[in-house]
Length: 208
Image 1 (cartoon, helix red, strand yellow):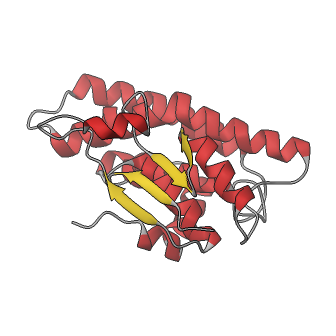
Image 2: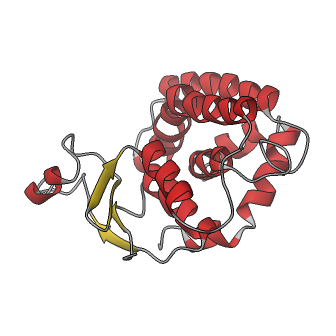
């Protein structure tokens, strides 16, 4: 099989999720830079890969995909390497529930309303940040309630849920607000410390 291609930017949380999956599977891949926030707009050719102009998109031996979860599942199932999804129906459903919960309730609050607001705005909107932290608290409380006993979110097996959460929380803790809130959830903070030490996480860190 040929080398898979990931289209996107190294600053993207969702591009990083796909890259983390590839790294954990031990798969060599190519990252083709696509900056959807570029001053001159999204490159026209990219809409052939993603009709909505979002990142990431993915290609492997002529097979194209967009949507992070679809890409992550394909990579796990199409390539050799450690299995990143539970076999049993119920833990697999819980894994997918965690991923869906993070997408629906954590990503916007943690990344855009807290971290991006603090990191990139000259005059951060404190009301927006406060509401983001309120919603982030709810998401972390839910994540803590769903976490199984053991080192990883699903227990003893590292899964796609860990990689999804790691990319989002990794951005959140770039700012003190995120670090301080995470510290209130000891089990998730301990999980995060283990994730942050993984080689896959270091290899997908955005170059400054």
